[in-house]
Length: 167
Image (cartoon, rainbow, N blue to C red):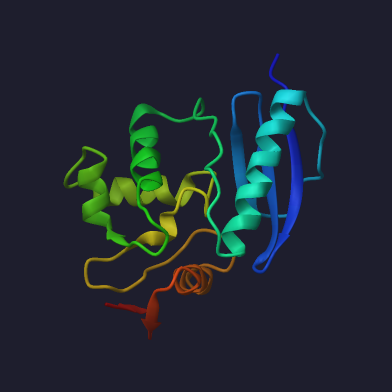
């Protein structure tokens, strides 16, 4: 039986819900719809790692990335998530086409975009670091959409003017 735990955490962009199983984080998203729930010692350890990472991110510091529970993903989705997690350091941006190639699926930009919009770890899996080839930042599926994406990119040291990344 899988034990899950959850907690909420206030951030500059609103309340985040962090959920964990015994295998790792299952979700980290802006939402306060679900109440916090205690779990096993293993899930609580993953939950605390997630909280520590989020706090460090908003403080402009680095923290060890927590383990993710990828069991709900297809192999393609897992490849995209893995490629997203490798967009580093903070402030680095890539295009959708670059990400599709990095995930081993050149030409699958739309499919990659779909995975990004539905993956359960926005912020931690930095889909906000993916922009259109023309430098327009595009939309963001979490929190307040494009305004949140612009805030996150700016927080990481990028400059944006009229929805376009300034390089």
